[in-house]
Image (cartoon, rainbow, N blue to C red):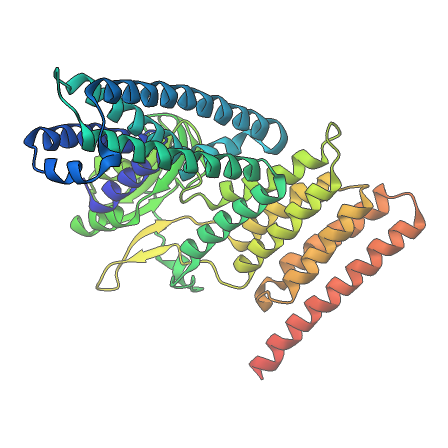
Length: 434
């Protein structure tokens, strides 16, 4: 398996809901065996005699360990119940697709793992005890684990309470989106005007998908290696976020590359994932605003909060150029073409649904225009037409959907100010060119 492919699979395994709890629980089992074995060596018997608070009888040790094990199992069940309640609230109030981000929460995973480790440690020590054994170190470790579990449980409740607050969740999802944008656009060469000339005119051989589902990742390094080995060229049709059915072409190849290697470089799953799928990250944030603007909720202030945070993420995209879709080998020969989203598509993914949902909502429409005006202050001059187009569409919607002339004038004034900001960006580009 290619190292980059293996790294992606390992990263997803580590982020999974069961990895960290299972790891901590396993550590609890090993710790129980180690402490019982150490107690049986009597190496620290003199130390235990000098420390009176470590003195305990065999009956007292069994009773204490049983109490800790029972308490940890009770608290563990309550933590699971509370976590499920939080998931339900998130699905109803924030958005069902954000449930995956809740399962990725390390605080939840650590809480369950720590409680499980304390429970298993106490249980295994009870199982390993022989008649007359006094597991002083094992009991001390169990008490320490129970103490840490208590304070961590308090932090878990605090973290859970903060995560169900929609403003905090909006900010958190925006940080995730900005990280995804930074990973995609950092230190990547921008697409040159002649890059598409590398695409061959004659039809290539299709490499078809063997299963149906969403593309969650496309690994560049294995594709480049495969194309170079056969001195060929691969044009990928699949890109993260797209849905493919079995038999649909994932790529077209020129030469004789290994088709199995090409399929292995494309990860297909039953559901979309935020890793590598920038459009899905944008959808997660837009969904919060759309749900807030739905007739059943009608919470304009939540939509405004989501819109303000989203504008900061879109500004990162507008400040940079999109990486080149063309991948060349070390000798400069074109080998792979991977379709990437254009800037206008990424911005449109966010602004088109928001504009349609805010038709007739003057308060949110004004904030949408203000957000575009803020983005205009930092956008690249070549992206000015994208924002200008969205301002034109908002103006058309305002004329058609806002009956009050005063409200229409307010929206028109905001649009005029945003266009002035875009004009400054365009003039700045002209000055640099001179």
